[in-house]
Image (cartoon, rainbow over all chains, first blue to last red; front, side, top):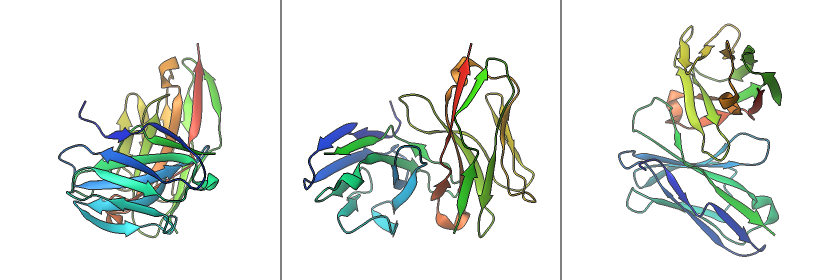
Length: 114
Length: 113
């Protein structure tokens, strides 16, 4: 399968713990995005990479959140000191370095904070 | 800021019925418009798109026309099937935003045999 893959698919954690999600984009895609989706809402933009450079971060991304894409391939999203409000589906998407706007999504990583 | 408004769901139809899901947008520039679909247990996938006014996007029997005068991009299908049951998201992207998209809240479609 050459699509976008995310791991883990589901994470249950206790409030205050740290969690990390991984995303492997489609191999030839230079751009990688993280979105968050809560029940009954559409995806909300969190951050975006072009190759290894993080070019934009949403105001939704508090300083407890950090994302990296060290070699311009896979990316990680870490949430420190999780809160119940962090419970959501975290979506990764990738795209070609052409302004078509089309995104290719993974299946998401669902976070449940108890 | 930019926003997308979709008709509230859920929508329940019988097989072979006509489908319309309304979508309107607000944008500061000239966006590209998209419909994404999310089937149960799967990730979002692009259904169709239109990049300029009066363009019509089409795929799998679905169509949507970019209407600049009404800032709309309504999704239509003449005859739905049970396999079309899914959540449908309308989205926009401004070329200056390098692919960052703004999504509507989604409309859940259930088609009954």
